[in-house]
Image 1 (spheres, helix red, strand yellow):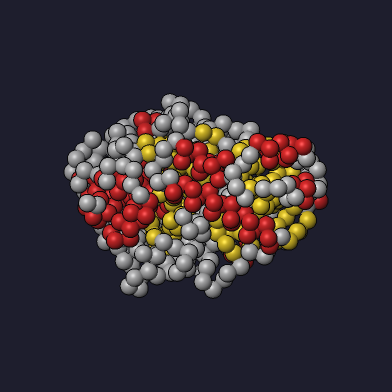
Image 2 (cartoon, rainbow, N blue to C red):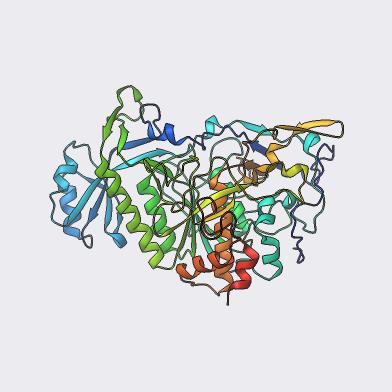
Length: 511
């Protein structure tokens, strides 16, 4: 561990060198292509005739009670041929499956039941459609020594943008803070993550899968977000914003990118019960307020019989259920952070969509920032452009943080000396990846508000750590607000919210 980190993540990053990553043979780096479906247009999301990313989950229901969940109420649900799959007693919610087409109508008549909602299955992102571009050592070369002994720290421009090194030099490293990461599967033996994982407190809610990421390739969304938050400062690869915090890994999405809202709700409550101080949710769905969804007609593997249904009431009740869960977690002392979404949607003008869970009053919503051509001038490039895909709106964004970008003219290639090469990848966020070989640790670049949220979650963890733990979430947010760099129009604005988070100012502001 080095104690004097340089504020600039890179000093003279050299492109076009033929220097290879020769310190170890067990590392690989890939880049995610900017055509990732993680960034979708608001128009396509709203038009469910063309987009099937949001569906009613077959035979699955969320039942909310008007009070405490009684054993008698549960027994009545079973009597209606309902199989209880999860009981969230803390908030009076139970999930049920039933093949009875009239189950919802019958269950709604039970005394004490306030609503019965069809659960939603969402394709949050699709890894199989992401084009993975392998790292070319001869083209990109090896980053120079910057004052830290973690080999790829220089590639983490996001840490420079939020002044994380200055926070570390001030003694803020997140020690004693517990951060839950709700996401897809994780690389549990990654050299940069394993030292900080509380495996006993971690859990999997993706039915039919395990906590670890099992797909081939390095594009593990969960591993990437967890690394940005709390990769250990161990001299191996990267460093997390809060490198001494403890990670509680909670799998609420399948490795394929699908998952249900009920899994997310269970994950929040689990993390709360495990003593999480901060929860990061690099996930979300833009749900049409008009309640138009595809129904899989009981045969989720056969899209030919899917049909459009409209249920505006279901959207409102779903929001109520999620708000109930997030409010409970906040009351228990958890600071909740979520990505604002990648639909390039102006929430003030286009009110046809509601982004869940970032729209919850108890959740801090994070938009994404990015440089343009950072690799060409790493010490002088502006790092805080609003990312082209990021959702925005005066009531839709609380803070901004580094998420990376790819969409601007001339960023594809550049000529440096006699070498022409791709440079856009360096404007992405660099973090840990996954593979199926426990002897190798992988890394890759990715882009999205999913990458912005973890930077903000790391800052929240540093604040809690400096305060000695058990910090009220309202106070955490107040410190974030007071210490954020006010970009855009003075005060809260639609793009940066209260500002781009600043780790150094945040930890020195804590009394």
